[in-house]
Image 1 (cartoon, helix red, strand yellow):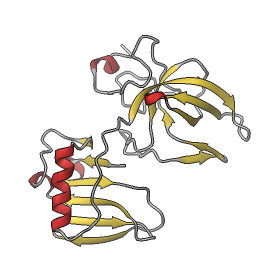
Image 2 (cartoon, rainbow, N blue to C red):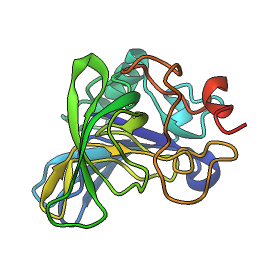
Image 3 (cartoon, rainbow, N blue to C red):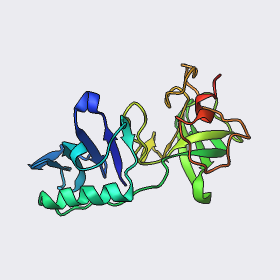
Length: 213
């Protein structure tokens, strides 16, 4: 898993790279422009790369970054030169995809949550617990898979809601930052002809930007 973000206006020239979830208090070790981040068990969960634009081309980037194989290689050289042994692994798996809700059943311990079986890319099906009031079987939706970074900065990790496992999130237009999206809760229901199930969903693409026009 490789989650990256670059926000020069808010964090100056720092590339944030996350490889795992936090567990307990973080620990930090810095060598030169590389800050090694570990969890309470001394496991690597990421790096902060200072003066990042000196090492990788981040022109025009403001927000989540999908690092190319070349960029990962460049960062690994920087990390190794700083004396850290844990290298980054390439992750080009799309994190936002068109999904199809195959089933939606009431949560056994909630009067407003539903447990869905939602088909995504590669023919895979995820169990996702959803609180969207418009959730139902037979709809196309946008799924934020584990490892996705939402526009708000929220990272999607595996979890459980009231004792039921949930691997991913069925998102709304508002959560994706789409123009004119309704501000009340509710999953984004895509038109049947929007795209095939499993297709990567790009919130900046014209088709997505025009969904609420």
